[in-house]
Image 1 (cartoon, rainbow, N blue to C red):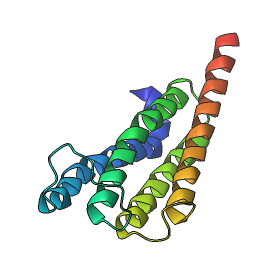
Image 2: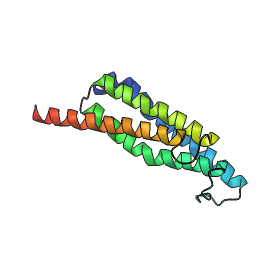
Image 3: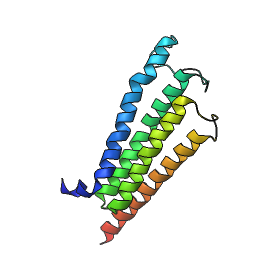
Image 4: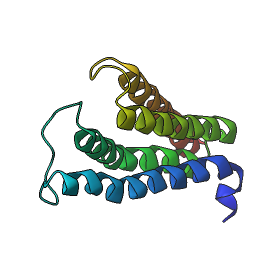
Length: 143
């Protein structure tokens, strides 16, 4: 599909983000099983617990993936500047990779630490993707 040819990095970022979530799914189940936590249950909110941190990293990815897919696809379909879309989507993926690493390792404090900064950075990039997507859609609608 020619419409997507200039958005290769954004498409790779979408796939990469989805792969991270899919990999975290079974990884988050392993420590829950070892801790005798029922499948589908949420471990107690103890940031020192690896089962909790892995589960939160997985759930946060599932909560965020749909927004990332939506704003990125809207920007691409609306014909937003490919350089901006590719950069912003790549930055979202990079922040997600670092966010997961920091989360799983338990680096920093639970609130307002590196994990929070990385989450907010990725969130801000998604807001920017949404804004340029809406702008491109509206400019195309009025042309």
